[in-house]
Image 1 (cartoon, helix red, strand yellow):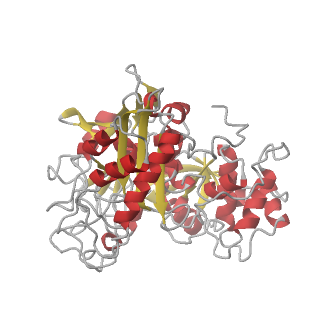
Image 2 (cartoon, chains in turn purple, yellow):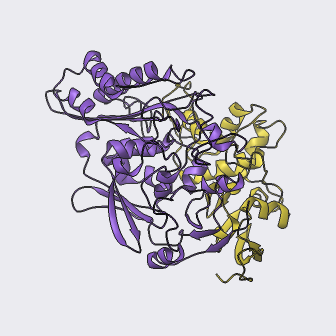
Image 3 (cartoon, helix red, strand yellow):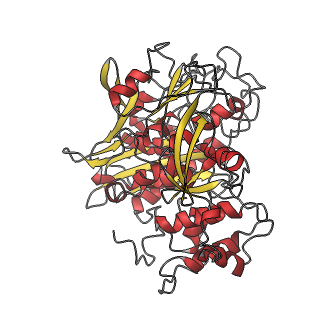
Length: 357
Length: 183
């Protein structure tokens, strides 16, 4: 690891002061940005060991008062940026009112990493593209202008949607797929004041700036993530994650599906987002509209999948992800509609003596 | 947080106070030293293993404030003031921790390299209280890799000392249902 200076501010103003002036208005993910916030550190520490990110200074925000998870007055919830992923997934409010978020978090990483990683940090994690990690190969995300080694290379985990000629990396988060489906808002602070970023605008497609993962400025601090009321989806949601091993692996394809089903069994509203298929969680409102009022069968679910996957393009070794994603969407919607799997425990019909929920 | 040198290019050291296995340490360390490197290289606590150094194997797992974490993925300076337990701190003198005894009784290791991490991880799992069934133990121990493949015995050892192990739970020893825990 390169030599680094370290500071540990005790308040948000101190933290914003310590991060310094923005070196480049859009350099949040630049490898050599002068200073970076560190929270859980599970991704940044690793990238620093590999010399992929080389901040000169770390601003440790772990002692800031930003770890609370609270119900908000409008029926939603506020997740402090420093709430740990595990504490979020197991929080009674999240478990009962946002089971989709809970199961998405628990599908990701390992228990140790979920204990360390924060909710704000989860948004900031970098791609796991093999070539981004391999400094011996060109990578536009790591070294802008050097080229993309993934195109024409090993692409099993790469994008089928929204890729560019510069970059075909995917965003690796599970949590963010659920946050996209649940219409989250990201709240950030900087010397210029506070602002809110709609979740769909937080991450970005690579375009010709593959080095930029998101729209956060280098000197902006995520303070909390808010979610609107989603009780109508709680009984019919599922996070389906397909991967090369049963646990502790990044997704090949994941689906966050949530349905609002009325007393007659009709779909009133639908949410559908895909993970590990693009540079950001992939969501299209027109795919969700297909489901409203439609018969809850494989044909309707398949039509929604057609819309969501419109324009999908394989890279060769990942062509299989297009039919895989289609089938995963149909399966996730079937399971969500049936409402029988929580993903947090076994099937609801099995004995569950200790759940207390 | 006053570093002992002001030049950014010089090897800055920061004062860090840690309680490790009940013993208090006051140290001056550079910011880029991982907790794992501090334990192994500077404090001679070599029970925690450096398997991958990237958070993928779990051999470095320790408990911070009773919570299991990968000591390779955190900087020691970030843990200032924390209470840390490593595998060396699990036994009470000559008396093994019940989980250590369960690992022996169940033959839950071959080469033993992953065992310190497995033990600390399982203690963390028990503290968390989220696992009740064999399937859930398997899922919630998935951050610890065992190249020898002692997983069935490790799972049995953990189940042996889970609280309320004697209460009837029809799913505890039921066959593993693939995909039922976060699928």
